[in-house]
Length: 114
Length: 266
Image (cartoon, rainbow over all chains, first blue to last red; front, side):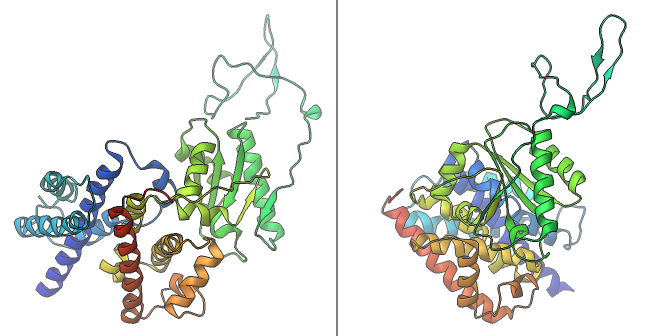
């Protein structure tokens, strides 16, 4: 059960990282505007947020803050920074890394982790 | 929007009562009142794009949808039915209905009413003509959806291809869920994510994107008899993911190169 929980947490972290990466890239591309055109047809695509939520619902304590919240938060931050850093190092301009910590806190809050 | 209502007798003036729960016919707008018998019979022959055959039942559903949009939504530039509904057979999950209009409406409310009317789940998108043309030029998903459809009116949406690498990077990122969470997804979710990625992959290779072409490419890349195998969740995980990751990486590399070169269009 313990190992299973750890695996679920890692899967949860991957999906939350994706959510944050997507939100920050969206800001880099559209600023404060929404990507309405692209989202119209893709809004029915299952997304990382939905999958992260599915995993969250399997990680105890379900209705309470996770005892591993700092581990989860720090790992998500590292993953997001690595993924965005890869893009920046390859010449992608306009990504604001200062947004990472705040977005991670926000998404984890929405997921009931912190 | 059309409403059939009865004239009722008033003390000084007769009146026609209409429901407050309606889309369109705003307070203060002028309307034409005429007897139902004199209503013009409109041309209800739809236009088919890349559809070889369609059964009578589906044709009837399509007509019901067009009638509903005429009645509830009113004047619009076009109504396009697409998605799995226009494929052969009855394996569709819902009906994608694209209303081309610059009118602002509550899509969710319209979707619910339409679903109640025809008894099938629907996905309603209202989009203005300019955005639709923009979508056709920049987004492979739009090209794919409109490659096979039933339209209320004849249309020609021939546009040049413009590649915005940053936007496509965002769209591709959605398909990454499959790499991270293969086991958490059902067959339909997997298929949609694969299709999104392959459409982007083909678009980046400057190849034509249509539903059939994308399905054929999926079969070729993943060695499947039929793309439906994905919907049925019949994939061999390791073998499939190895190929999936390869295409994902290739697409991502092309996007990053495009972003680096600052090429927003070609």
